[in-house]
Amino acid sequence: MEIDFEDFIAKYPPMTVENANLTRELILGMFSQAEEVIDISANMIAYMFGKGYKNTLCTIIPSVNSLKLGFFNGVDLIDPEAMLRGSGKVHRYIEIRDFYAQQSYIRFLLNEAFKMWMQRG
Image 1 (tube, rainbow, N blue to C red):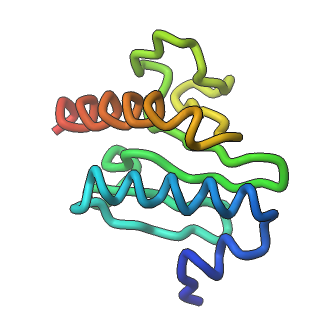
Image 2: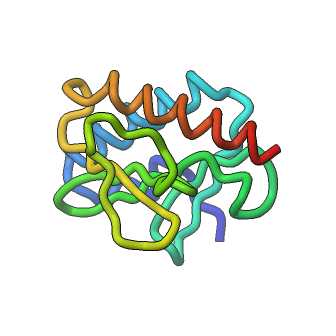
């Protein structure tokens, strides 16, 4: 079943929806070539530069309390403000509670994730 971004995110509280919309706009504004892939079973939206997990730039993972912006190989991302969370071997995320307060750091992390993707080539 195909679902669009608005329908996917609509079931969440207004703050999560707002942060998701703003984060999406930032991602697509910075990386217009990224493909947006909604994965209903994983409850996330991936932004990719091709097929396969290694071509994933980031993921938006909504929840009732916040929005997570996840990064493939996030464990290797430069994170000077130590905002990335997660205990997995590879994936890390930043929790977005106030997009405007976190916007510049989100942009920084996205740029770092893109550099890493370019190196994976």
